[in-house]
Image (cartoon, rainbow, N blue to C red):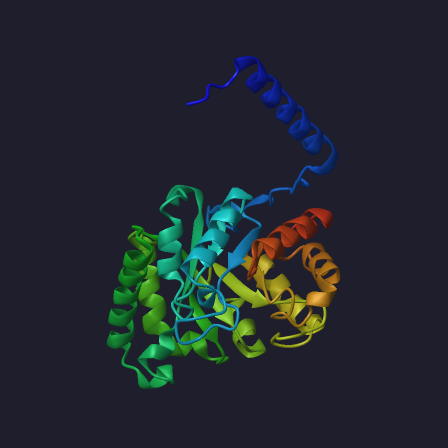
Length: 308
């Protein structure tokens, strides 16, 4: 067996080190720093979270979405990347089937450092809530909240919303669901309750409802995938804020229809002074990083305070 001459070996490794050092200095560009999203306190809920949230429901339905279709490895990796970038707000839903994906992410993300929002798809009980018995609404909601916690492997959910309200009379129609969620809130299983709306009548009805802590509202400068034109929606969101409720914006890029106008959309959302936070369904780490850069590029206007 031949022996290695120590002097030749050291000379060779020294030369290699010099070469690598030269490559590092000349060819490797330092990664562009990305600002972490601001931390906010969500209305009167006492919940502290990042202003930017990671959505998981792009083209969601039937307990799947574009995000779940990425597969466990990619979606969980995206969630972890978001957390490493400072995103602590994660937007889930029973309808999207994303609970178990976030449970996997929580293996390496501290539960007490993140805010978990989910949504109750009450239509599993029947298409028309007026046809569902009040006692059944209460029991099904209580069981659903327990199931949500089990699927995410947590002892509580931070925010639970009634998902996709469309009726302008939902306050009268959803009593059993609202009562059960309020009871879960009293018991500490939920920290805040609220609604996501898909008609202007449903959105308008929630502004004066004492039960609502949080509204998830569709908003962008073009009115794409919204309940109505921005000039009609903005006064309603202003009323929510004046009544002390938290407003989270969604459909910031019109569910992907305004991707070529991201700058304008982010500038608009940040300048409203009405959004406590926003959720955007980034489908890759590149998209997430771009959203963080845009949020930093257009700082948020001062948020409207109650009765101001």
